[in-house]
Image (tube, rainbow, N blue to C red; front, top):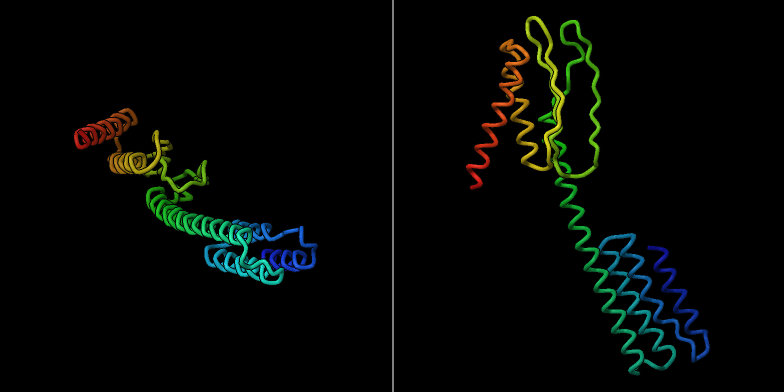
Length: 210
């Protein structure tokens, strides 16, 4: 806020003290534009209002308040201030929407990707999950560990695609893995079970969408 206010004050003082043929009033448009880049709608509207008031004050001090040139400068300043204000409103709304989407995606991802146990039988497990992209859209990353009486089964994968369909397929695969792994199925039978589960889910998806 200090920089735009300082700019407005500087333009007013220099313009009033300058010769009559030098007009710095149009530079006032930089104040709301700069504020829009640094702050939200409230400060932007305030600085835009101050800039318009400063432009009127300059015209009053120079004795050109009721001239067409000043009317044009004030009108242009009002239009630009209104545009940057609308820009900040839209930007802030999109930022809030993106923040909510990121929060929902993070919670959903934590529910899907449960932390792996540090030990499973004689096996020590260490894991670190870092998404490739810091975006709000949920992905199809998956991993899990399941202990049987004789062994530990691990699965690591990535479903193709993004968003809810990929998340749904990943949840289906993990659910099928956890259910089948505990039944001590052999690895080939486990793989066939997972393949059958995803094929059935895909067929249901196509049947529903068509």
